Length: 141
Image 1 (tube, rainbow, N blue to C red):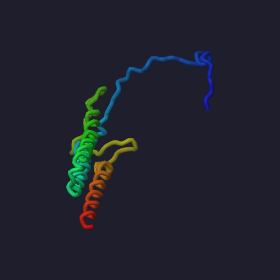
Image 2: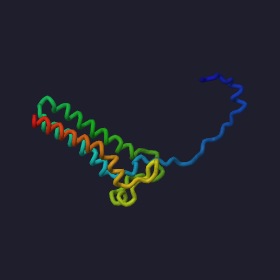
Image 3: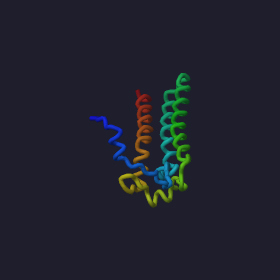
Image 4: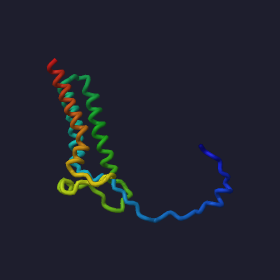
C-alpha cells in the first residue's frame, strides 16, 4: 500500500551524495565460444533446410527466406551487441581450448564445458531432430 509522505519530512532525512566514479566493467560475451553459437545457428537453419527440401513448394520460398533471415538477424544482433561500448576491459569469448579446460563461471558457480555446451545446444538439436522426425513421418505416410 502506498502512502503520501510530505516533502518537508523527506527533506529533513535525505542526504545527497556524489555518484561513485568506479569504471563500469561490461562483459556481454558470456564467455561462450563462437562455435557454440555457430552450432546453434546451424541446427536452426538445418531444420529449415530439411523441412524446405521435404515439403518443397514454390509458395514456401518466401516464408522460408524470411524465417532464415530472422534466425540470422536474431544471432547477428547479439553478436554486434557484444562489441558495443562501454567496456573498460577487452571482453571476448573464450576459444575452444580455454573453454574445454576451464569451463565457464555462471551466476550459480563454475560450469564444466560439457555441461555448458549441453545447455546451449539441447534445444537446437531437439528442434533439428523434431524436423527430421516430421519429415520421416510425412515420407512414410
